[in-house]
Structure formats: C-alpha cells, structure tokens
Image (cartoon, rainbow, N blue to C red; front, side, top):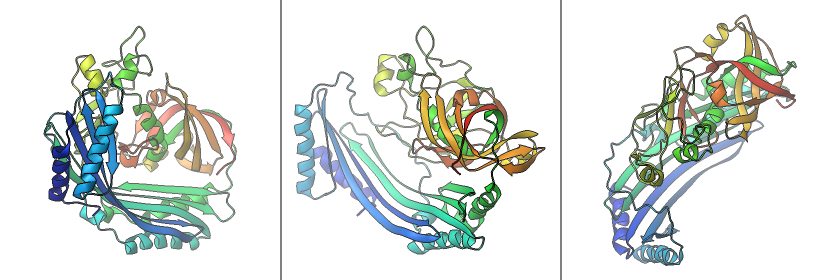
Length: 444
C-alpha cells in the first residue's frame, strides 16, 4: 500500500477533510519504498527494503492547532485520527503567529519520477556492491559503501481547496576505499535521479585511484592556500550558508544577511559577481516537488544574481507582517559555473591543495557563517598543474561567504546533496584563494 495511486490517495484525503468539524483541516499523505545495500571490509553487511505510508492531520479552531498521525486507513482509523487532532487543538494555547491553511494553488508538475530508478531490484543493488568490492579486491584495497534508492509519493488536501499529488524517485551511492594498511583513503559519491546513468565500475575507479594515491601523505604547514574544492567538498559549507537566507533571521539581526541599523541586505553585493544561485523545481538535473511543506507553490527564482542577494525566504507570517509575497521555500539550489572539470582546474593551478570532501562541519560564528571542519579521503598538493603528492588532512576555519568572495575559477556543476539538509544541489568544482587551514589531522 506504500505507493498509492492519485485516485486512492485523493479518496482518503477528501474523506478526512469531510470528517473534520474544526474551522479548517489539512491532511497530508506520504508513502515510500526504499531499498538499500551496505557493504564493509569487502563484504555485504546488510540489505533490505523498507516501505511505509503515513497520514498527518492538522486542524485548527481559531488560532489553536492540533496534529495527529496514523498509518491505518480504514474508516474507523480515519475518524479516530481526525478526532484526536481536534482534541489536541482544543487543549492547545493560541498561536499568536497562526496562519490559516494555504489557499488553492496552481501546481505545474516537475519531473521527479524516473521509471528506471523506481524499478531498481535487489539484483541491481547486489551488482553495485559486487562491482565495488571486486575492483577493490583486485588492488588489495578495502571497500565500504552504501547504496540507497527509493520511490515515494506526496499528496495533500485542505479545507480551502488546495490539493496536490506527485510521485518521485532517486538514488544515492557512496563508497570509501582504504589501503589494506589503513594509511590511504579515497571516496566517491553519486546522487542521481536516473539509475540508467549510474555505472559502479566506472565510479569506483575514482575512489580506487585516490586511495592508492593518498598513501604516504606528507605534512604541509597549516595556513592560507589556493584550494580546489570538489563539489562534494563544498556542498556542506554551501548548504550551511543557505540556512541563513531566512528573511526573519536577517531582519532580526541573527544572520550574516542582517544590515547594521536594522533590515536585511536584500539587493546588496555580498559575493563575487560570478556567484549566481537560483532555485528551480523543474530543473531537469535536480527536480523537486512543485510545493513546499506547507503546500505553497514553489517558483523558478534567482536567489543570488551576479553576487547580489535578490531573494530571501519569507515565511507566510513574516511576509504578511512585512507586506511581502510569500512563495514556496526552495527545495533545490543551482549554482552557475563554467565548463571545466576538476582535472582541468588542477592543470591550471601553479600551487594549491585539492580537497576531495569535507566532514564534521560545525558552526563557529553565525553572524559570519564561520565554519570549522576537516578534510578527508584524499587531500593532495598541486604544483605546476599536477598532483605532486598526498598531504595529511587539515582542520579548516572558513566562511562560505568569504570563500565565495575569493573565487579564482568555477568548473562545470554536478549534482550533489547537502550534508546539513536533504536539499539537492548543482555545484561546480571551485578554485579559491586564501582558504584557511588551521591545523593538521592524523585521520585519513
């Protein structure tokens, strides 16, 4: 029952809305079928399929709201979940920032569903694990990885006539490859909408080469360096930064986008003029649902244009309070770049550091988005356009805001997923000057 047809989902939602005696009612129905295989030490450790379907009912009496959830859908269960939500609403205090249910919206479907991805089988997953492990065994290396795939649907309806239904699918693959002595490490990751474009044999070769090449790492003095961040290395920093594009945080002085004396930096130059960020739910590479969690329609919209901040995320309450128009919270992020690969950027670098990925990123200062974290799984010294030797990993202290003001060159964007959120992103490899490494790390 996990993936309901539109007709079946709508029948349940309509029944729930009719059952409610509250001033307003919103019902949201979601279902998913997720498969996975995990392997470590060159052996499969776990695999399986998980399916689930849930119904969330939210009702309101005036400014009092109640929410209840259930995963049974017979008439008695639907009646029970609606009454439970109403009981909770009557007991709840009034919410001074209450906003009524979203009025009817017009949604343009986005290409979130791919049949090949939805049709992934246990045999496909086993083949990915086998291909990854075989390539490592042949080179006396050790593989540990995870493949996750799934399909899902979202459907919702409310008493104001807003309604939506759409299916989606996706897959993600990561593999860490270590030398048998544990001194070298390489990594590869893929986030894909179309499983037919995935080739584990091709992708595992990236991690294998980095694992072999990273053994015997040398210590390099911490300091400021020209760096080339692969998209996976910058994803965590950029996704952290996007959490501060909330208009209320900026207006209340809690963000790097807050302006001295009050207000926000909307319309101001904040980044290098080459920085262009936008959200587009219909983008073919990173499509997302055409509505946000409240059922508000998303739009194709620029966020940063030629380095200027041109859009902030206004909640419906904050938009009403400030006379702004609220649109759906972005579900993806697309950054413009050039047409060069990471290898091309390396060839054009006289001296620098190549970073495969970053991890354990934590906030230091929210006012500047100063972050700290570590490099891992392949960090290399570049000289005269070539990888000269592997270097020990660094701890860094850097702000993505400053980072995006120190651009030397941007490469061709690829699909990645943000570490601090589920946001899909298209990010280019980035060549940056004066990236701050503060200390060495013995971890590989």
